[in-house]
Amino acid sequence: MTAKVITVTSGKGGVGKTTAVANLATALAMDGKRVVCIDGDIGLRNLDVVMGLENRIVYDLVDVIEGRCKLKQAMIRDKHLPDLYLIPAAQTRDKNAVSPSDMVRICNDLRPDTDFVIVDSPAGIERGFRNAIAAADSVLVVTNPEVSAVRDADRVVGLLEAEEKGPPSLIINRLNPNLVKNNDMLSAEDVLDLLGIRLIGIVPEDENVIIGSNRGAPTVGDAKSRAGQAFRNIAKRLQGEEVPFMDLAPQSGLWNAIQRFAGRK
Amino acid sequence: MGFFSRKRSATSAKERLQLVLVHDRTDLTPGQLDELKDDLLKAISKYIEIDPEAVRIELEKDGREQRLVADIPLKHMPRHRAG
Ligand SMILES: Nc1ncnc2c1ncn2[C@@H]1O[C@H](COP(=O)(O)OP(=O)(O)OP(=O)(O)O)[C@@H](O)[C@H]1O
Ligand SMILES: [Mg+2]
Image 1 (cartoon, each protein chain N blue to C red):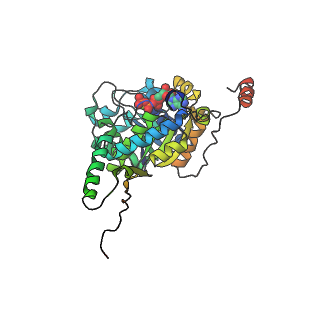
Image 2 (cartoon, rainbow over the protein chains, first blue to last red):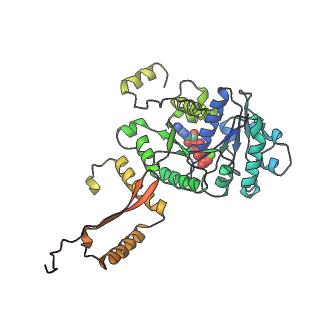
Image 3 (cartoon, chains in turn brown, red):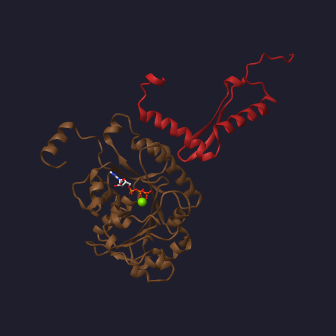
């Protein structure tokens, strides 16, 4: 085995990086892959709560770097999937405790017996971003169909090109089909046309994402969730499968009403 | 336009982003682009007569590539060479 290291980044904060990492890592593990995710957001640790693993943390990334524990000791095993691990970020230390070469070294140590290492990047284009992309074999840029998120995504794509990390693939998150239909939200085509990079997935706005993070159980585990389906599809594409893009046309009012009646909404 | 604009918001979002991204990527402000145009026009006017009003110089984007596109119509001039 030699792992592929995938970094999820965005420029703008709050667009869904951590959500994407938790869901993609879980989906890949559900497909039988050995997956380690690394929370690169030093000081603002979140991946642990989104994955429901916050009570199991003993050591973190900075403990590994500073030699207080072995790499294996900082890898927290998922509650349900035996081949899914999290290396949590340090909560109390400053970002300078981690350098790009530390990230490269840790990822290289993980490569031999892992299929995928997924790194959650902090927002911004500073040191934390540089650390997060240092070891990446490929980068996923997450954006929302919204002006500031797209603008920041474009900046990040430019920086990745300059670092010769590119070309990244794009995840458009929180697309609202009804708004797009009324031409009050940028469509996926608009965003792709503006950014000019390859699309790997479109994730609809879905309340199940919030419900999932409340429970510490990523949405991909919920067979009925649309966002979960979108993330499962992206995970397949990361494994080299060709999966058609979901039909995100708004469901009719009647269809919605029936679903609500049937207790599915 | 303005208050009674019937353009839906996604259309303005796209148009505004198109402009912003072009300037972000080239690191040229709209003001600097105007200066560049003036300098270019001055240089060209040294050799041929042009109508500054008809000139169009714009940054355009093609995928992730940027180019500076200039459309400079030449003034029609009566031949004054003897012959
Ligand atoms: N497809 C979606 N539908 C609904 N809510 C979503 C969706 N994706 C993300 N969210 C919500 O948006 C919020 C921000 O998501 P998340 O924490 O993943 O973003 P982030 O990019 O990691 O933020 P930060 O830059 O602060 O690290 C969360 O509350 C999350 O539940
Ligand atoms: Mg995050």
